[in-house]
Length: 207
Image (tube, rainbow, N blue to C red; front, side, top):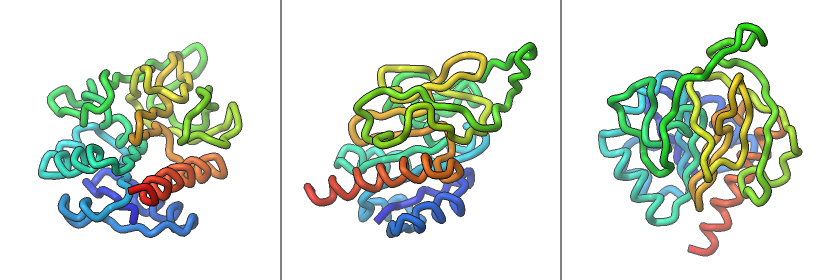
């Protein structure tokens, strides 16, 4: 069972549709306690980093507990940013802190007509060996909509550029994140979601 975390900032309908198209069993977790029965956890999100403050009410501990127990975790867009220590968008709101670093505002470029927010399709420069990106073609185009982004770190398995490079996908053991919206990124996006489901299934068989 895949548990979606609803904290009022997630595009749950589109994510749920994508998961259903891949025959995944999905629930929207009604409480932090419900995550105890999840085989995988997805934290979606759009909008302001400040919205993640609502995850302080038991959700943070439940999600971290799941990660410590080996439950795969997948953050999408704002959900990926929350995997980091925080964001300049809401300096007083802590991230989950699984990945070191802070998210910062994107830089635009008037000469190149690169605006903020960054909305549209960008290609991925991918690392080898990523489970999340397995089978995704080099240079695949995926759909972004955001104003803040995470730094490129050792956990970055895909990078893209909007005036400056930023992390497009991260991976650390069973924790994964993408800045783009895989549920809106056609075949490449569905493949990424399928890859996460494969990780969940493989781990469930071993546990």
